[in-house]
Amino acid sequence: MKKLLASIATAAMMTTAVPAFAADIIVVAHGQANDPFWSVVKNGVEKAAEHTGANVEYRSPETFDMVAMSQLIDAAVNQEPDGLVVSIPDADALGPSIERAVEAGIPVISINSGSDVSKGLGALLHVGQDEYDAGKAAGEKLASMGGKKGICVNQEVGNVALDLRCEGFTAGFGGSVTVLPTSNDPAEVEAKVRAALASDEDVDTVMALGASTAGEPSVAAVKSTGRDINVATFDMSAGFLQSIVDGDAAFAIDQQQFLQGYLSVNFLALHADYGLMPGGNVPSGPNLITADKAAQVVDLSAKGIR
Image 1 (tube, helix red, strand yellow):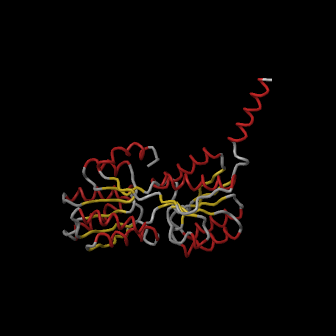
Image 2: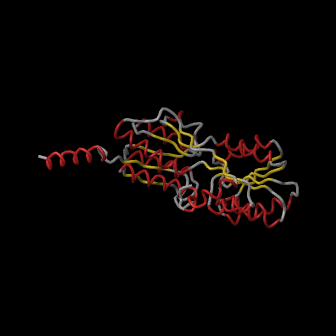
């Protein structure tokens, strides 16, 4: 009898621990999984799949291409998944595809870009940070450090989230700001930042919008000038964090993108199994990572978590 009761208890525990069924969830993001920033998002997605038992696919266009991304969303809708995660860098281009998903009865959560349009398109909630407010906080901090004239290095002009970062930075900084458009090529970023600094000796501040793509090259460009220029970036990389520790950069803005991938998949898995869903948007950032904090998160950044 004891063995029988033990077997029943074990079976009951297994029943409660395993989801009723493995939810099928598709993530469509505008950033490629091999991008240093988006690889962290994907790591969060994969960890959530491991924890929930959901079947999860991460998809993205080969480049920043809204037509290709809308096609990926349409293809995902045709598969009728139990949940869809999307980033929304361009609501005009992606809105119709997202609305088709909602009309098809597919629960949608947005991440990273699109906090201002997510609800209007029918998404259940957004996991990310308010990009304008984050940019404004960064601008205010850099102004308090004596900044008067800055450049905002934008590696994806037209990406609404990045444009909002520059707009918020300009508002918070209060001084003169010029937007410097570049590609995602770090070599091009470094060359363009170096040229911008050489053409204007009054520039004392550089705001980058991505740690690996723009932040690290901006640090290299500034160091080559020998001038005292504050460099800050959105997001984090082990290299940029080390620059903060070494005194070559001011701070990084951490939006904890691991949480964006992890929480969105978790929420949709819980919704598929139990009908649960938070009642509103979930802010994953911003957090300013200055010299007193940078050393603590270098290892986690190198591991693809921060």
